[in-house]
Each structure stands twice: as structure tokens, then as C-alpha cells.
Amino acid sequence: MGEHHKDAHHHEHDEHDEDDEHDAEGSVNTSSNGSMNTTNNSNDRRTGKGNSGNGISRPPVNPQSSQPQTPSGTASMDVVIAIDGTSASGKSTNAKRVARELGYIYVDTGAMYRSLAWHALQQGVDPHDAKAVAALCRKWKTSLRCADHQVILRVHSYYPEKEIRTAAVSAAVPHVAAVPAVRRWMKNKQRECAKFGNLVMEGRDIGTHVFPETPFKFYLDASLKERSQRRAAEGVQENLAARDQRDSERAVAPLMIALGATVINNSRMTAEETSARILSEVKRKLAEAAGRPPR
Ligand code: DC
Image (tube, rainbow, N blue to C red; front, side, top):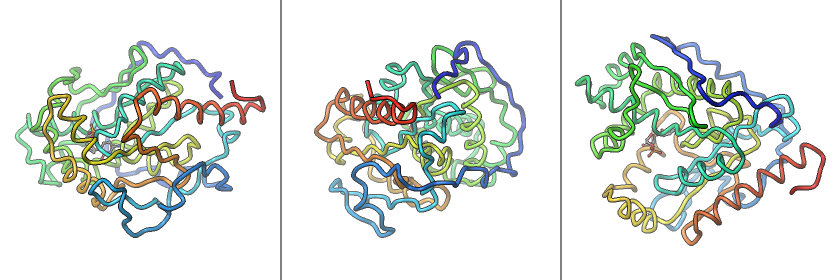
């Protein structure tokens, strides 16, 4: 594990017009003893809606994700660190920090959904029209590219880095992300990222659906007030509660806490503290898997 250092630079892969109806949904390793349950989400293992104290319902634990491998189960594969959570809970900041610290490759799956939402708006496709969005996705000319330890999804050879952060795209993206065919397509693309090497992947369903077999699962959250302040500090006014609600209530791969995930409420934590917590847990598990004391 971790020995596998593929060249993270200049890997490029083009895929065209894929029809991902044949998703390998059943291909995950289900040989779990559940021993990776780490710290503090035992209260969340119910399907009802708890309250995380932030004004929105805390998502339930996804029972389908209850198959974490032991770390030794990853001995022959690259490491995938899954960081899921609510909007503005610090996923990007911390995922980037953890990736940098470990020399892993960072993948922002939200950016992938945003790129498709942007593409839909560009093409005059109504984000609420699931059929039209699914058709657009199927015809999409995209390529996965890994450069500077980051994977990006390019749209017709262009990465709309700035465009995908606009308010119009933020408003459109939860609708696009709720389309089942889009989610299947994205899952395949996101799993494909493992070919680039060890990953830190952030999103909403990475620990529950995209890489349910990884033992490295984290779920970040913070109070709604704190998260709104963080967005405002970035100059973005957004109804985060509404977006979280849409992400949590969609039928396919809703935002949920993966069973076995380490839940970190970082309302009163700095990014340094949050990423240190993630890193110490990852290093502990890696050391356990290698049979040596953590460094
Ligand atoms: O993390 P973000 O705000 O950039 O995500 C944009 C949207 O994409 C958000 O509404 C949720 C959705 N998303 C998703 O459904 N699944 C993911 N793995 C990542 C993002």
C-alpha cells in the first residue's frame, strides 16, 4: 500500500460518448468485519433524522456502505481517502491539505458535477429536465486529466475552473446531480481516477457509493451558521441549508454518513486541526496495515 507511485503528472485519458448504463454496482469488496468503525458516529446509526445542531437534519448512516475493508485489505491496491460532508464543511481545504501532506492526488468530485451543470447551462439544457440532462451527459466529450497532483475533468479539452463557481452553476448543480444516469456516469469516472495513484477524493457519496470498500472514510460537518460565514467570507451568499437538503433527500446516492466513517464536526476547529485529525487517523491505519507503530 502506498508503494505504488505512478507518475501523477501528465496522465491523460480521453473518453467519448460512453454509455454507463452498465455500472459495476456489485463489484465492491463486501468482506468486512466492521472493525474499522472508528470513533464517534455510533449515535448516527439510525435511519431517522437526527439533528446535528446546525438547523438541518443530520443524514442517516448508509447501511450499504457498511463493508469497510480492513486496512490490510488494501495491501495490493492504492489508497483512497474518502472525505464527504455538507457544503462548506471544509472538505476542499482539508482534502487538499491531506493530499499535499501525503503526496497523494486530490480529486474534487463536486467540480465534476459542477462542470456538467455548467455545460448544461451553456447548451441551453434545463437542469430540471432529467431526461435532457442524462442525454447531454451521454454525449459529453470529456477527458480525465491528472496534473500537479490533481485530477480534473475537462469539457471539450477545456477546464471551466472559474465558471463552475458561479451562483448560476451552484443553483443548477443539485438538480443535475440528482439524475441517476449522471450519478452512474460520475461514479465510473471517479473510480477510474484510481489509475492515477493514491487519492484523496472529496464529495458527498465517496465513502457510501464511489469507494465503499475503502477503510479511510471521513465525514465533515459544521454548524449552519459557521458554514454560512465561511461561504460569506469567500464572497458567496448561498442558501446552504436548501442545497444540503436537496443533496440529502435525493433518491440516488444521497448525502449520508458512511458506516465506519470518522465524523468530524469542525465548527470550532481550524483547518490545521481538522486535517491533523484526518492525517493521524490515516497514518495510524496505514501503520497498522504495515504492522509498524504510527509515526
Ligand atoms: O462540493 P460542491 O459544493 O462543489 O458540490 C457541488 C454539488 O455537487 C453539490 O450540490 C452536491 C453535488 N455533489 C454530489 O452530489 N456528489 C458528489 N460526490 C459531489 C458533489
